[in-house]
Length: 80
Ligand SMILES: [Zn+2]
Image (cartoon, rainbow, N blue to C red; front, side, top):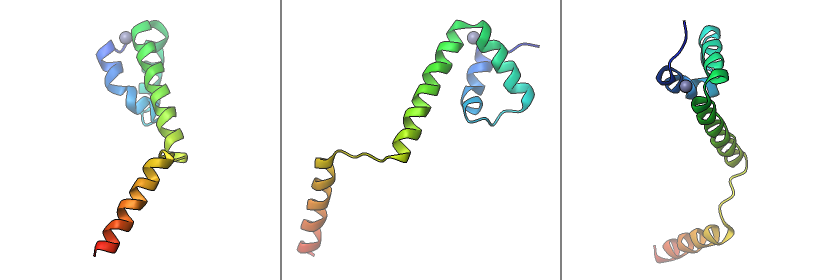
């Protein structure tokens, strides 16, 4: 049995989250090693995921946005 591109796509997110069963993981692995389109999509998703995880670890709001929020909070509390 082999996964089609659609079946692989449907499981890509779970594959990245390592939530697939051993069998499913192997089938996705097999498809990715033989299909450039899905391998590319996988690379993209993996890159996005790394990026998101990086953001979660270091929430880097731009400094001026942060001070704007603080300023508006201060304005609100002084108005109330
Ligand atoms: Zn494919």
